[in-house]
Image (cartoon, rainbow, N blue to C red):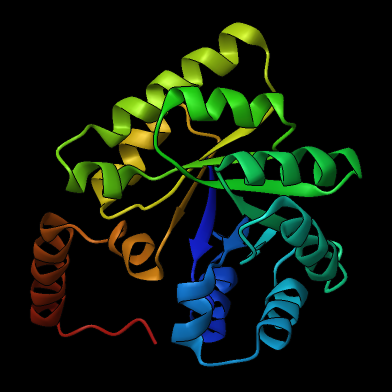
Length: 217
């Protein structure tokens, strides 16, 4: 499973990229607002740092506007994935942009039926929102499983990009279900390395080593 980092924070991306765990980046208008920078400037910087897909989102609500914005965003770098919402207008834009050979990430997916339409429209990625479904007492992970089953059964090449990741459990379960990609905030990816027994074991080893009075260097 590929790891995308869900942020527009350059330093956070650089830190994770140095570890080799960043296969791509996803951004959205809220993350751009949080970064407090010009969308073209920060997106270009991210694209120069990361070799994989970098999702940049359109903000128009009509297909014509999304297509125009998507083409403009695509001029930033060759690894831009144009992000459009899973609306009827968004599907129209996806069909046109994917037909031009551009990567398209169809976002805000909340049902398997929506995911099926996105695949038919030529989406490169479908982004089901796990956490937001959990927030309303629906099973976000079950949606990932349903989409995986449908895509595999019918041979769709659209990649399942699990989004709205809230926890380490979300990451591991998505990997088990067969998500192609999971995009998560930097804090969640870092938390994957943490375990209380690791901390306890390290503390024991260090205490015992101190008693030996030895040094390695």
